[in-house]
Image (cartoon, rainbow, N blue to C red; front, side, top):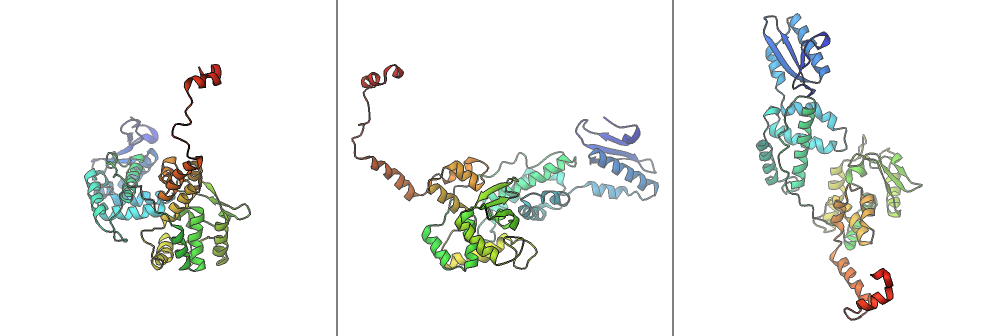
Length: 375
């Protein structure tokens, strides 16, 4: 355990080799004080600050005690800026509001699994803006955010345990696949302006996630090669998405209507358009006028994937075009639709009405024809 000599004076690491450093100092009355800090450089900074406070008669032991109590709110204030650098920044800010409201003043080291589970059960019962309870998948994402938050605190030596680690995630129902039928698309297009349909049509033609689509800038589009570059996809990786003619036609209308660097600028400028603005301002009113129910923005992406599968595109290619991290996600579309399943099974009839078993070759005949290779 490092403790004395040179710049390590007043510093010690506990447990040894953990990377968690403490400071030890005495005030003017000879009372001993210890503080758990984190990294060695941060501990050295705190140690020097305390020595200066003591020398200048500005040391406040009660203030040190208060600062030592790290609340969930304190964790959020410390780490949310770091989290916002990731592609999930918008969702993370929403999750942060959830936890701030539920347990913001709770000391972080006193949060228990049952506290998290209590919030979880509450979210599954209360209605969201859509009038329905939060889906298990949505609740799981919020809990996963809290888990990452505590892990960052552990990384920096501010916390010793993560109360979410052993909490079992809720079972998610990812089987819902709702895609737009051809006649529904015709009705939807008929009630939308050319500009609004261009936005929806671009989503249908590319299969981009809403966040990926709205974050596009003009320099991300290669109109000559017909290629879209996603600088930062959902999984933090750059990927390229080809454009068909439908996507190009939609872009011509979209880009011809403004001069912003953003492909989908906010109506009042200053950045890209928000997801809620596009969904509630463009798609929802049109769905109501077209009498289309049970359809959400993400279902445009479901439509893209489903249509590829129904057109006979292999699942591996669909995975690449959609940017699915694993083939398991893409396999949800393998069921196609009942009509296409019937068409597939009917294709066997094309072979003709031969009797059942007519393609069975007697074993002896097979051996005579195939020779030694059949042995």
